[in-house]
Image 1 (cartoon, rainbow, N blue to C red):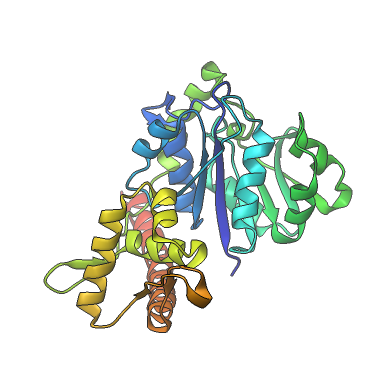
Image 2 (tube, rainbow, N blue to C red):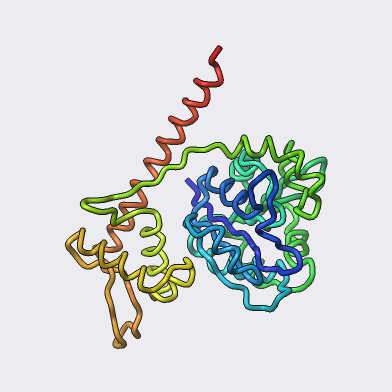
Length: 308
């Protein structure tokens, strides 16, 4: 099964407006819920001018944050490149969805994932839309492209047959938050399609010591080799992170994170061998459970749909 990561550029002061509400749900939350329903993980949000609002909105959603420090008006392409550079070696493909196009359906995402090709675009009446599925093979070419107006669109046009279009019956792939009169009529149906089980796996003895947020913290330490860097990417205080790590180690009875000061590892913070094994097995268990839950939830929906 492909590992699909999510990328939501939300940095621009001029174009993003991530906390705009449509149908009672913010554009940003709507995108994250849609990605969650499709099993997208991890989800990376590139922040900028609205950093505080974005982090407050998604504090409990288990997403990763990276700041685009360009200026108040960074190009969309610069945020896309920041996200792709981070995700390139962590997944098989990236689902890129600008925060100002929040109303595409989970069923559209599934169609994109099922389609072979390096770049997969949804289209409605032959007009290209969002989100865009970018498979790993195409990422280096995008990262090498110049950051200028219409950057991604220009790169994709040059990919010829490597880019595939999937015709969908989903108006949400075209309309932006700057067209509320077109989005509002779609909100009721979109809200229905967001229906999903909210499963939170927690491991505990006398207290909870491992959950999805702990998993994300360990993953970020594994990637960044720094507790401080991991905290920044999760909008988590350093004291809280160490409290989580210390409690995890107390409950498991062995060291999870190796604290190093200088030497051969240059002061990096690393997971121990046991810590890596714990993280790996937890992710496998979580995936198996989520797969079973999706099957059971589908049965549940079919059962209630057939009630007289």
